Length: 428
Ligand code: GLC
Image (cartoon, rainbow, N blue to C red; front, side, top):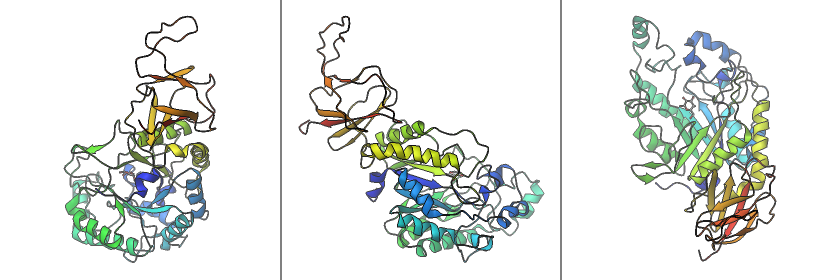
């Protein structure tokens, strides 16, 4: 699969989940989880007035955090559209804010020099032709009610709507670099629901062809139930470089700040900065990207926790981005509790826990020409300890042949994840 080079070069993007569900502020699946009727959910439509919406501020926060691309929910599963769609009235144009929010987003992101991506929900819990199924908010209604609701619903008409909206999004907003379709749930082990939907319902082959036809350079994810350009592990870290049918694939883990994608006011499950940095590093060490989500509030801004977290990540990235951008896995074997990334002859040792005094690097003896901390370019001394030497008093014992031993300060540098930059000899 050929994929534009920027994607694996950039490594780090921002996901934005934003829509009506920012108002109830208790997860973007609130309509589904709480079985809210269209009528009741309408209160959020009537009150959607994000007066603090400033996509330039979003983009600047993303940029300062070291992110290189941004992906916005044009429509989530609740069916609400953030752009001026001609195919429905269920858009931001008809809420109190009365604006095409996608247009402003796209312009702001580009102005900050970042790449533009759209998330688009295949699922639609508002559209009158979307057949009620086992994942639908109305799934627990009495069977006769579900039967009544489904009378006259026609997925062919929904499909035309879906394709028509994608066409609007891919023709009205200039170059779109990335499309995250979400999601298929048919005939698979994870989503065993009645009336599940997949490639036939979405018309996936045609939709993908339409997508590529309108935006030839676009990167498309794998959730149409047909192969895409990358795979998208969600809220977990793969334990090794990902493969499909034994072949290495491009992948991107999408991750949240607190387990919810939409703004979730009372959620306290907040990931600390150092954990998020470790997740990013871990991904790059396994040839993956990270798409880290922020759920803006109903006023349209980022909440204080999200802002502080992004600042913290940015503080780390400003000094360590060399180990992320354009870097990928190394063929060298990293010691326990560390991750290697490599770019050319520079090998980056990320220390996830702080060792006392030394770290022993297998197979690197004779291969390193210079070593320094990445955050302050201070030299790190290293040596090879002859395997035959016995440990005595303050003297370290011998190490297995080929081991390179680094000497580290006792006090851990005050950065989220300390990194040693190792310059490998060109001839190794
Ligand atoms: C999911 C969820 C969702 C979120 C998404 C992000 O499949 O349905 O709410 O948008 O994945 O990857």
